[in-house]
Image (cartoon, rainbow over all chains, first blue to last red; front, top):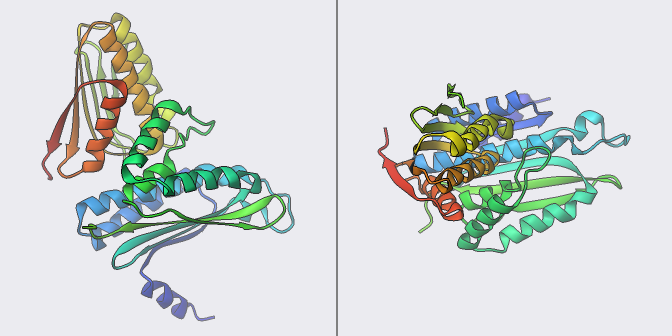
Length: 188
Length: 127
């Protein structure tokens, strides 16, 4: 049980936030607040700081809105776990890595994957057009989300592909891992 | 129509709606838990302004950040402004953004373009 070693490992990877558990909205707000304070210390570029605030807020709020979708009576996933989020945010030399994980109903995979693939397939200009189209045409979901989250994240991370993975857990439940990189230096 | 004044928080913007002056100010950050609920009162009042408000209307918008859910609400806010304009009133929309914040400038351009509204784009110097 060498916690110091674990801590140093984490430190060496420049992880600025690591979290596993259920989310409340206040917790989300507090997390984003502490991320912002950390960024003030480590990031000099004002524009990157803003983009980071934007992308991290969108990623974490997005998780928060979708955590209640798995109602697991399954013995394999406890009810705590089924509503748990996993968040890992790391500061690398050239980019920030934001990674989230959560259980989702398997039946949702096709829809999410299509949205991510559609976003990854288009150029920056087309992404802007797609954002405008969804902004003007799509109705709010029951949760008050507007279907713009992933598009916004892709726009703000300047051409970085949205990485994802779906892994089956039980017959009806899968695990969704999402990762995006936010460049720290301007691409020329 | 009633005056609305809401103090800003770290997740909600300052809101100042004054129907007597024909003025709406929104400033700061917007990522509330329920953005529809937050913006509803503003939407209702703008709706009413189109019918019974004065002949002039000015909006001063200066966001530092808004999330995508707020973005949809803002689309509805501007849609109401478009109705105010359609009702024959003179409308001025000033869109402020921090120096170098191209993302925020583009966000304003998107609303202006989608709803065919004229925006005055005003870059603010960094503090």
